[in-house]
Image 1 (tube, rainbow, N blue to C red):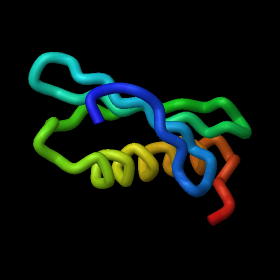
Image 2 (image 1 turned 180 degrees about the horizontal axis):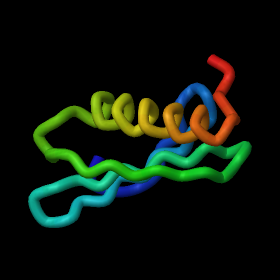
Image 3 (image 1 turned 30 degrees about the vertical axis):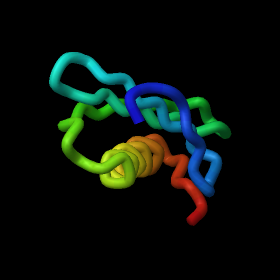
Length: 70
């Protein structure tokens, strides 16, 4: 996905933006509106980039005392 938004099964919204030779992936928690971003290679699958962004979002939510229910 070059750019746009895609929700996952848990309601997290992902935005993919291609910037030069990289892809910026932003993950937003729809309950808290907390968002995180990662930058990855466009050669990596969207699923893997989403997994990494989700992992970072889970970390930030847990650090703020708001872990997501799985």
